[in-house]
Image 1 (cartoon, rainbow, N blue to C red):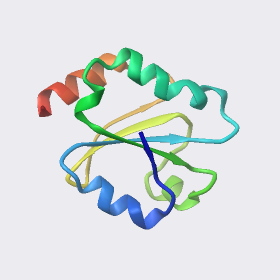
Image 2: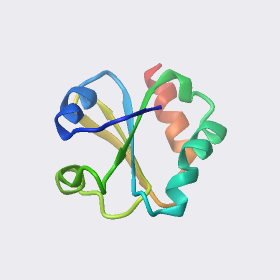
Image 3: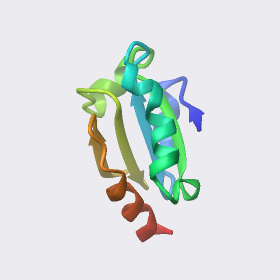
Image 4: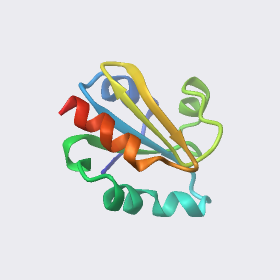
Length: 102
C-alpha cells in the first residue's frame, strides 16, 4: 500500500481504472488497523491499487472529497467515486465491487 504525500497526486491516482484510497488520521486508533483488516477480510485486495492518505497532512483532500470521519475507504474508477465506506466498513461490499471489475 502506497501513501499519497501531495494533493496534486490525487487527481492522477483516481483517474486509474480501479483504485482504493484509505483516508486516515494520525491520532485515530482504528486507522492504525484498517490496512490489516482490509488485507484479512477483502479476499481480492491484490487486484486493486491501494493508497493511504493522512487527512491531517493533506487537509484539501478532506474538504474536496467530503471526508467527515476516519477511517474512510473510497473506491474510484476513472475519476468517478464508486463506493464509500466509513467507520464500520462492509468488507463484503468491497470484495464484490472489485470482483465486478476484475
